[in-house]
Image 1 (cartoon, rainbow, N blue to C red):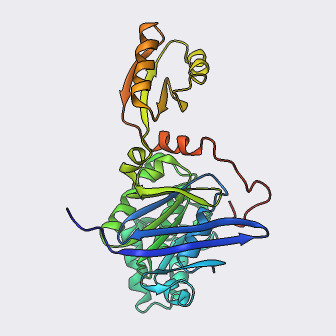
Image 2 (image 1 turned 180 degrees about the vertical axis):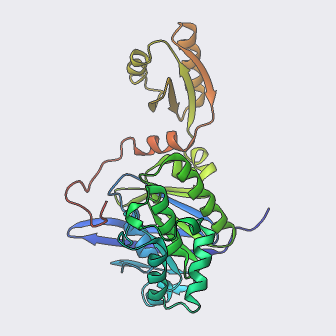
Length: 318
């Protein structure tokens, strides 16, 4: 059994309060170095605020920890030197070309050998042929590439991605994640804030945050088992009627529709199997047990969780 990677980030009791609300409430977290760590949860749940505090970009009201070996409270400037931050909204200059934007960012980072650094960034992200194109004329996918190139100019050890593939097409999304996996393989630690499941499944580790609290964290592949969730895939001619009926069954914790099938889940496997056999014997659909996946797990986690912080924006900008 191999040892887990050393943590790039280790924090305890992180808390952030806006007004009379704890947007992040005494959160503990360890992020292994060289991994892709996803922060999943609904909008306004505290994901971005958590990431900013973990990386010294926002001062916590309580708690302590380290990031890349630096204290998050007293050495935030040291941390920032090693962080690349890609925001959800494209934040470069639309009236400059791709090259001009990268050159400007290289100047901001005070990089030596600026032209060579920009040339390498253009090549690495496949931007050479478009380097003289105005950023404002780029599609969402190409803007995303440019933003990533700008984040990587100073060779950060930690990369923060805030909803990184919002508004881009499926191919651009796949290409982007290929780049991210290569970065992680080279030793870069990557934090991803998202509420999209197709981004979450790309992550090595997941933390699910809802309304300021961490509900669960661990390896992505292990989270459904950590919850103890079991799921059946159900096909039937009238899914709407069957779904309504299943929601009244006490042994089913949740029913979710996935395209032309239902996924019925619960934590009591014997009871769930008995129910499946009974429904199938009565001709109510074709039932097949399947491994529970992240989406079923997170729908289950959210069941019964109350939003105690509903109201004005929590300061995250989401």
